[in-house]
Amino acid sequence: MPYIDAKPFPFEFGIDHTALVCIDMQRDFCEPGGFADSLGNNIENIAPCIPVIAKLQAAFRKAGLPIIHTKECHKPDMSDVPLAKRNRGNPKTRIGDQGPMGRILIDGEPGSDFVAENAPIEGELVIAKPGKDTLYRTNFYEYLTTRLITHLFITGVTTDVCVQTTMRCANDRGFDCVLVEDGTESYFPEFKEVTLRALVAQGGIVGWTCKSEQVVDCLSAL
Ligand code: C5J
Image (cartoon, rainbow, N blue to C red; front, side, top):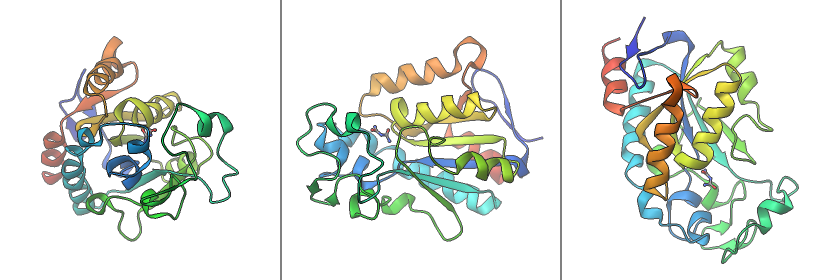
């Protein structure tokens, strides 16, 4: 069985039971004028994972393995936006308001779309999710269990919000998850570092971490 020499110990995965998950590689989180920018985040901290995720996507596509893309966004009528989420903090503009890339965090608007480098190709599942957890009010669990997918390589933004929430919730439902260290970023580098350490502590209490190079090498040797 293929394996990656991951932390805190090797991550073995059945080739027919494995997928790549790319979380929220959207313009709203990565580009000026989007949701993250409106909250005052330093979006430059996100940029390094974009080419890394592109390389991982190419390797998974070449190996014929599934890729799942998520996007955090809401319905245009905003019926799925909890008031608490819309009102939280003191942003310049709120969810649903007009921004430079259309209505902020609304499905179908330019800002909710994927950055060009990490966009899905035909046949890949795209999940629109209203929350941080990819399993909340989506068909993610049904998609994985129907296809007998048990092992997830996780990438995306941000490490300490949607990425870690999804990994923790998937772990609770019995999925083995490995977070690709250089395939994820946070607006706060120190939060990224602590998150990576917390996930693998206590004997991999939430899962594993590894480097993208290990994944690409492993898949190209299959
Ligand atoms: C945030 C996310 N940071 N995709 N969303 O609000 O992590």
